[in-house]
Amino acid sequence: MKVRLSQSFFFLVFTTLVAPLQATDTFKEEQTMFGRAVRASQNFCYQVMAKTFWDPLMSGFKPGRGIAINELDIKPNDRVLFVGEGTGLDFEVLPENINKKNLQAFDFSPEMVKQAKLKARQFDIPEENIFIGDAQHLPFKDEKFDKIYFPLSLASIPNPTLALQETERVLEKKGRVVIMEKLIDDGHQPSYLRQLLNFFTKFIFADINRNLTQMLGEGSSFKIINYQSLEGKLSGFFARRIGASYRIATLVRINDYPEIEAQGAKLIQKAKTD
Ligand SMILES: C[S@@+](CC[C@H](N)C(=O)[O-])C[C@H]1O[C@@H](n2cnc3c(N)ncnc32)[C@H](O)[C@@H]1O
Image (tube, rainbow, N blue to C red; front, top):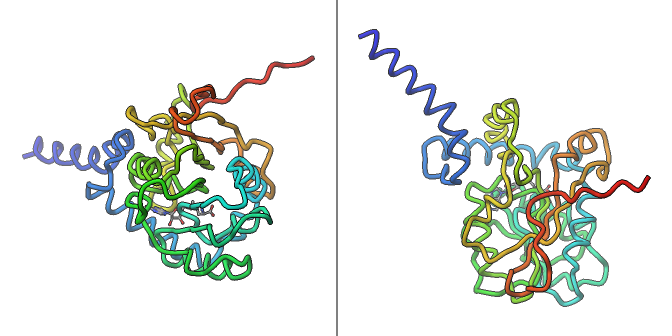
């Protein structure tokens, strides 16, 4: 009897604490009970945060948004998609010369979308271009967009590999994808403390231990051509402190640009000049 009890206790601890940490590797969590609980809790938190403190909390990311949108290199008539746009904070840094009718943005959280629609009005973006959606199942035909942007959303999407496959499908030939996110670089492992912290952050806002190469998966037609840190580039009390964990990555299809070298999800060390 005693043995059975201790076996059950071990099983419970394993399935609630240890297994979820492992499951991150496969991005299949959403099919498990744990994954569904994470999803429900995260959605609830985003509903509340969108209505209350999201905009002031994230205000320090404005310079990062500027860098990311600059990397997108939006031409005046490009068709642009923002994935997991949240409350629409990126609208504030859009270049003036783009055709805003060609911009579409969506999010999984209805309250985030409601806030983004309010912002869209201020920035002359048609309200109907802002909608509720799931990055893992895009409601678009193939090759529909020239530029696709993930502003801090890839770490919150339950199966990012699926979302990136959908991105490949709807991206026009010679298109470009930009991702701004907290990421673990190639060849690095999150510390045990970060792994433990991740158990809780997943329930609130995101998985903080994702690696872009792993998310792309083996069969991806994308390559990473630019990968930079936001360390020292964000502003405000909150964002400045966490900026070192954030990256901006630019992806293109391998076959579209054979002449551009792949950088991988790693930072290039700048040679010291003195
Ligand atoms: C960290 S927030 C970032 C919000 C906003 N992009 C910003 O930068 O302020 C992550 C966002 O991803 C959204 N999200 C999570 N899963 C999603 C999915 N499957 N499809 C679309 N959006 C998703 C969440 O609702 C949330 O708004």
